[in-house]
Amino acid sequence: MVRHVVPALRMLVSRQLLEKYNLNQVQVARMLNVTQPSVSNYMGRRKGSAKIRRYLSNTVVNEYASIIARKLFEKGLSLNELEDDICSLCIELRKGGYLTG
Image (tube, rainbow, N blue to C red):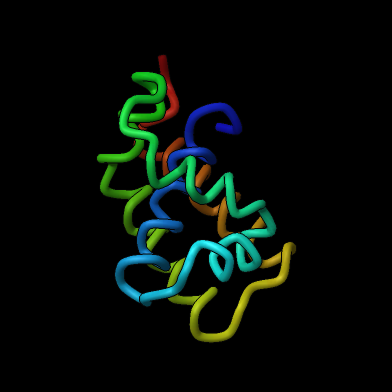
């Protein structure tokens, strides 16, 4: 989860905030509590591991990324709320059999 799903989720949320909500990389970095170079890396990363790429196209991960991006943009999220959303995503992926192999 931490090695593959969370990086994919960060990449997708960053893209949503930058493209859909027209924020800049510094604003996105503050919202995600990461550095601006990290956001730049998320946007420039076309390769990454095959396992990360697998989650970039996963419907469940993309749905959660959209929800998290909207929440961050509209009202901000506390670290606890973000952790809750990530835990919910993990549960959904496990139910769907996406975290095997």
